Image (cartoon, rainbow, N blue to C red):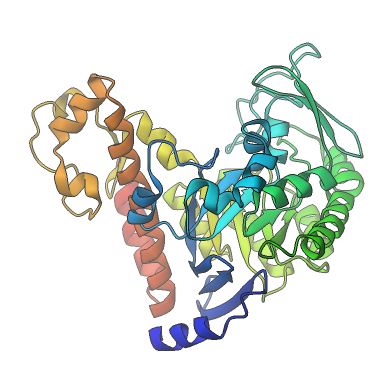
Length: 414
């Protein structure tokens, strides 16, 4: 298989924004393996894409990010627009040159950040559907939606800005990522069914059309840069009819792939992903937005997701929470103070190969910056290696056995 893949790579037309190939399908499920090739290289799927929000994964150099096995990185259009400004990245030659990253890149549309700043609720996505906080007051709100776009205040200095589908596309083309996302409205689990319908019909669907038109115009105009791919984003919350309707509508358009987004509940995440996968074109990639917990990863891959991203592995790592095959543990616990063994002897990451639990415990207790680096290296490597193992299990047909053995052990304490 590797020789065939190498041969395929040499035949890829690099003037194309994206090529997509399926290598294996899992019997009895929607999971598949394959490759997705961009101007900056090929991604073996399924794959976890680490998030480098501001053109950096916090505390890691690009070389360290590559060493944990990252095949690509996702940056955030909203944050890069505010600082240093999309025009700076354009002048630098694009995101890859700006951050010295030689592999594929993604940017999200900025819509999630605009909405999560306070368009309606302090807590925008709640994975179990409980605990939603009360709506923000007019004084607290930082974003206002209309059918043309979103007006918002910068969280940095309070300055007022405007995103429309066209502006989001212009920003993402200046940033220059290989894969971009259409501008859409992120709803919440608190929003009514009628509001979800209105959101799709009046905003997400029309904004997808406008994003695609502007994206195609920019690709034709900006021939001095590699062509960029555009993924449409599927919304519809927990409603099967809306998810399927949105998937059919966007699936009939000329997108290069699709983002599986929006508010949804954890207990039926696999089912929701299956609704979208069953309606979307088989020959185009599907990216799940904002997923990294092991049970969610298995559920999304089983039901057709190809790639996914999340800030969580790095974020929880910086707070001392480290992944193990037996679940997540907090390295700041007193029991690790005198434990002079590797944190995880089964892990091949730089952290576990070179440092003891006692040293990691000391770094966190002393608020040393190195604690962030070593914890992030381990957590990113853990999730990336897990997805690599899942990909291998889909290819050889052992997925369901691997899923059962891994999750039974990981969640045993719960």
